Image (cartoon, rainbow over all chains, first blue to last red; front, side):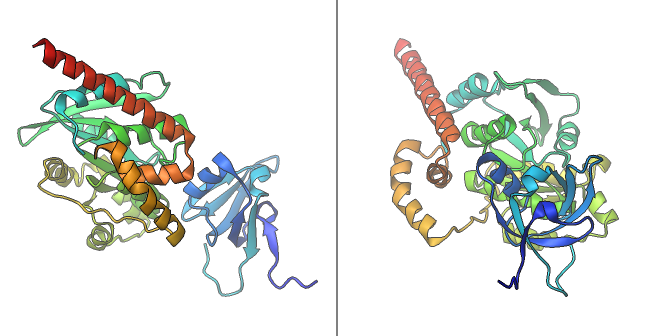
Length: 88
Length: 261
């Protein structure tokens, strides 16, 4: 099967690169909180730096730096930006 | 939004632990964490403030008073929250205060450097009360980041007064005081922009609204309550019934005191 538009999880995003949120596979309280922070489908997000033990990771979203545990970030689905799309 | 002065001061004292005099105009200060709410609070009240806890909660409660144009004001600094869809104690306090305490004006303080994230809260407050002022704080920071904000357009889009401030430098506070006075006294009546939801949600709202209007007596926003009912927000329902009980008890007290006279 060909993946024209690969869907990955946010936790797999390499440091320094950006992608676009596709969906949140979270539920309840955490889902609400993530949405309130402006992480909604369509949002551009860039990973900035990572904690010493590889967790958590700080992401730049709408001008704000937000740290997420990889456990939670793995539930957030993202797609790669096609070339020419706006930078975060 | 009708609440007699006696009922209001009873409610404020019993439910929120904030003593209010009948002649005081009340202001609630809401906003995300770290947007300078407390700086604005301090600038407005000076040393005339009291701090403590919200009743039964380990969350700080600060309220203070000031005079402007010979009118006394009572201002309550709410906990910083990203949202009012109550999942933390802080959010619950802020939401209950805005919903049930019925302040004369709510000032939503926004971080001018990250409006996108901050406007979420403002839109939620708009659903609860029309008596809102948006305070664009940290304009000095925004300037450093070369951000230019078109305040008149923002005001037009939001439908409420927008005041740009840099509270640390004391800039914009005179205008803020003036706008607070105008909205609190009803001289200025904002018409905050309301979010239109998908047609499914809107048609469900249309069915719920008449039923909700029956129980709220116009003292609460029926649309906001109907939306939370659709959410199935159990926590809000508890607060709501709690508040309605208190309302009835204080009303009985009031009736009894009338009979005794």
